[in-house]
Length: 485
Image (spheres, rainbow, N blue to C red):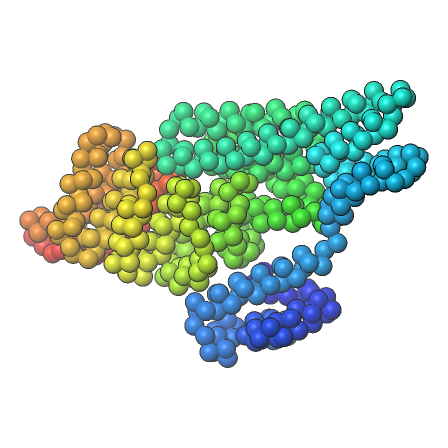
């Protein structure tokens, strides 16, 4: 909310009036009212909802759509030099066939300089290919041939770097579910390969790709073994901000800003500098649906869901998540092919319901997930999800479904080995004590097991059970009958 207010207040009067007029003329009266209220009046969210006669869900939706409208307007106002350059490149043949050679060469040389400034290697190959043809009878033919070959190689390096990003974040999703050392080794190898490619060229585009991977890798894969010679993460972030300022009209960089806002949020959250993390939370949280839908090639956006859960528990606002999620993900299109992202999304929606004690909704989310996709490749993730479902049955006091599911979970634990899933094993043991009327002093026994879990570390990055508060309230929820002797 604070981020949107700041954007609206900083809009030039001309732009503000144009956006307001556009909203009014398109019958978006509530959006127009919200725009004006945020700029000219100091109203709380509750007061705005009262005046608009809308609930919290509708308010989140309205705010999100207003933010989108403002971004669309600002993008339309951008005179993108990149777009202009691409148009010029598209007209190269027209210049060559209709202008004198001296004019053609001068035009191409000017275009070459502009393309170099923007690191547009694909287009530079077209310019150099044309220049070498125009100089076929001069010594400069060799120079332009070399430049052409160099930029073809550079173009391939950019493509390779982008491919490595896709491979890395796809593999990270697998690693977060398995915790397997072979998956971690592959992540390290991709990281090294990215470093090797970026050493070949002094390119801000390669540096941006490298930074997307490097920051994430050091936060979530190798955080305990950082090379002292590594560039500090804050220095990387500052350099990226300088690049984005230098190329403020570059459309790709414009869209990648949210990725680095996300990485800054994760960086400060990782090191528990929560005051600074809050600076970036609003913008990233408002963009969570967009991040999940469109940015998987540049980062691992599912991580923001875990960060939101951790933050809500830390601030004690977890009961707000369910209504917020309904609004934020109203138009979100699920992608069943991206298994790890979809599982994280469903778990987030499930836990948001759990915090409001809507156990039937949680069970529906999780059962649908288990029916929609196969998690046989990820047995530990499947184990956690089933145990989370068993918790819902315990809270619902459904003994039949609980016992049936527990039998399935125990078989899986025996196959995987108790020592490899100690957290799930202990958590399930506590649930079984709670659901067994034959146990005596079971509240004390459950608390003892919960104390043991509280000092345990996550066995894998993906761990839905770690977001369950192990308190007296949970003890009461899972106990069929408490008997103290």
